[in-house]
Image (cartoon, rainbow, N blue to C red; front, side, top):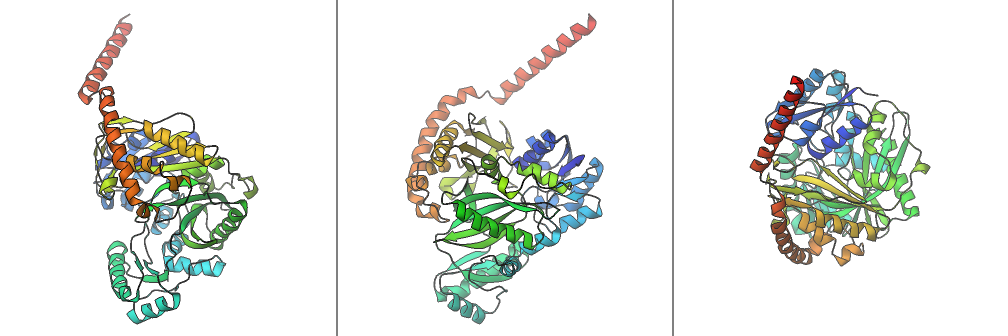
Length: 496
């Protein structure tokens, strides 16, 4: 096992990895930017190193500075978390040059799965179902018109590189296609430095279902069940649950086997996720995420497998913790992503100072967070405050538990997505699991009306609770008085 691991990330995922390190008796090393010098993760790590300015390019994307910190700390492995460098194919090579073990798959695997066109070709070769479309880049307008005509409208024009829904445009009619082709190429070039795009059949109202994969360096690959991630806006996930409400044992075997086949066919190692679109009894490969996922806690909740610990063990050369038949799904888990965003303003980021903070608790509740009272959320990074995860013996119990947990969660000073999640937990269509990737848009008015009522009600509660939050100066004064008393006591004892 490793002696010391550098976590090349920030926020809640950095703390999550550090917790796994602590339980395994491994020292953790944090790296932080100017904007994160007072962050919780930098303080939680066994040791931390400053790596640059607030811009990601100057810090969390700066491989030389990160490797320099690893050398200073004497780290023998590096965990990239998610985002930033987690899917950078050059990171593994650079780690190897510096004697570091990258906790993740090889650079060649990351590169092949990072290209939607290349990953599509590999999945076709492996016999994994893919969405009808073309498997090469499209640059010629006449070629685009021909392909779309053969597939049949609607179609979707996608950037080959990148992810997160960036560089995707749905086209319903032929006269829209050329404009979509041009705009998508422009976005792809500016966002990823690669203007390559391709065309697929647009699957209307699909469910987004993914399978967690674990693969060791001894040729063993398993799936750790499924998650449903259909509640999204602009292709960004908002709520995830495990298992998918439509999942049966037969469907899990079929989709899970396809996910394992996908990972095995490319020589995948460590943790990863194979994502599918599901519609009308058919499923299609969407993409593979070559890292730990934001939503991994719900899989941990229903299977009992600590995915981050498994990542560390696999990277150290150990075999998988269990065989496929050992993976059992128990109960139901839901995760709400709590972001510093205004859900009434199209989820616009709302960074700022948290002036009041109370997190929920009780049976079946987990909060993965990187913030605290009086912490200032910087404007330079992702707006996530925390992930609220609940577990229940049934889906209905999980929803009612999430409603209770959300009612206990108090965050003052910034606008958050808490009202959105409260509204979702009241939605009859969500309760009935009528989910698809356009759910939020379809029921936007209902969700918005509920949010406005919830926000008004929350304001009344916040007004009552504000007195429980001591002003920062008062806290400082109390802290100083306590420290003075302790110093005086120690001094008196030493004199005796």
